[in-house]
Length: 297
Image 1 (cartoon, rainbow, N blue to C red):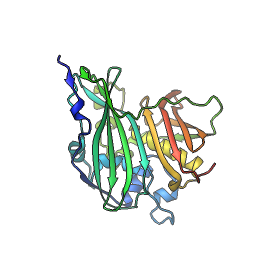
Image 2: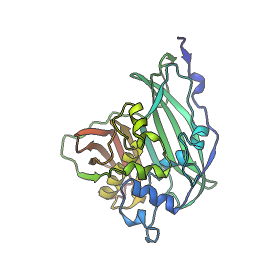
Image 3: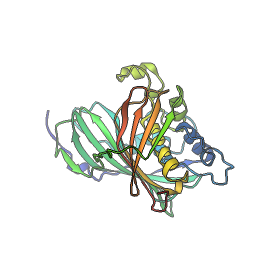
């Protein structure tokens, strides 16, 4: 097998596409990650707000209001995948989301993406893309996604461009806060309605074809659960105090398990570790959130 030069693919951009959402979309997403706080689930709350990690679903949903296929139309238009020899399938590896400006509670926006890094990792490669959500006035959200391409090999150079990976050592002291978040057996059924209709999360046969005994919870649902714990314990429930979150997906979660999120405050950074209570295994690691300086100390 010949070696493929990937240099020219760094900086490649996808077409800019429209994305949109309404208050119902925001509420459905918040319920999907387990929110009960009225400012996220009740449209008449005086402080009704978009949950800060909501934009993570726009790359699946686009502007659609009905169910979509997988991959969806907007995914097919915006996915940037270099020709990596041996590539078999993609696993969700890492995510970073930064709030540049608070998201309105409805509207029409634009989404643009570009390839910023390719790095050899074990039995595959991590392909890193950067996505922005914006309108004519401002940018609202910046997202960096690390897709692990199983089987990718024989490309050069083996590391090029940016990497958002970070090895985080947790403090030896007890956590400053611990949040237990029970999930339900139909949690993935609810979360998928926000746009990620991957059958892996609902169809037992598809799950088995992908090496799982049963459908698994969306990693991005667990991502939202971790962000919710940060906002609850260190932002006094105020999403405007939340700035960013970065995670690595370590192991899948089975719907119905309880997620135990341990949090350590280091200045304006919150170090995060998420475990499955039932199996006592880490499901999210190398994770850190940033809060604004005026947030709860």
